[in-house]
Length: 214
Figure (tube, rainbow, N blue to C red):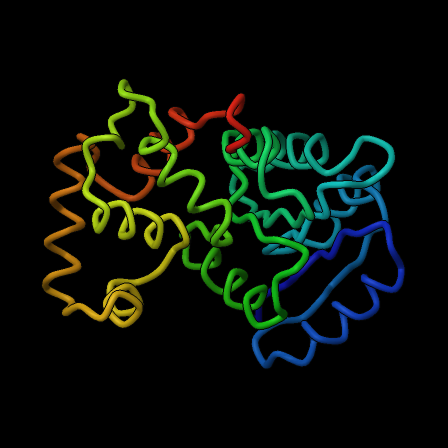
């Protein structure tokens, strides 16, 4: 059973999400918090596996709460939830070690998928954030290594950053598993990375904050 700490400053949101998440057979909400401060205090008490963290809250806010939680326990998995998918916040959170980032407009199904994905040790990013990370090198920055990628390779990067499996990528791109793997290792060579973790770090490093991307 995946143990969840749900953090949001709106009671209606907390109540609704708690009921929907508890309906999943492998998920249980073990605690709720209405502020970043409360979340920081509850994490060591509840032994939660995943923290669903609203980014935009009064007080210390979600970003600082994530920083304090991860400073105390770098292994805990945090999924940030925000109405803002651009600007510097997603980049800041990824650099802190947050494992997931989803939009407040996401479906409950996507949220549950993200929870299960990060529990396997993989990141999950909503489409908007993943696109910003993957495609920013095609927006006119000649120094970015992502400028070397073909359009198809950039699409594969986007899906990798979303945490999609080879089979999922193959289905979405209407390609064979073998072809997706070929694109994957080709872009690894172009970007000089060895795995998905290094790919994510590189995408964050070459993001365009001033251009309105993450």
